[in-house]
Length: 103
Image (tube, rainbow, N blue to C red; front, side):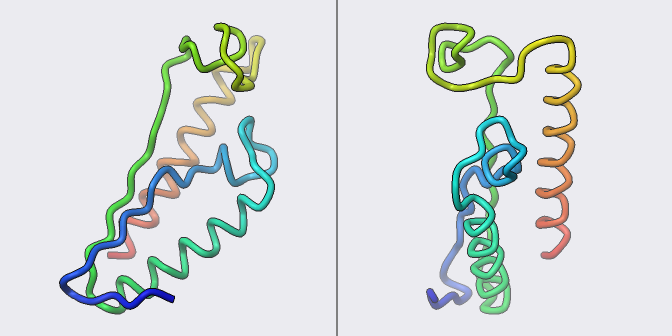
């Protein structure tokens, strides 16, 4: 495990439910293990007094990355898609808020 102190920072980049949760539309194998590892690193960084920063990438409903727009990324389609995106965004915000409250 990395050593953290007051002169170091940990930047947690784009850890989102949509990637980690097997039910997420962009889930990847091993995603939940990444979350566990990231949480361990956050705990160690906070214990060492390091600055911990979280980032989150997002995309508008229409983007050339999505298959429906000519890209390769899957998306949830149909009338339930916007509700699902809203729920996922809320879960991601809740995850980020929990992480922020740990400081």
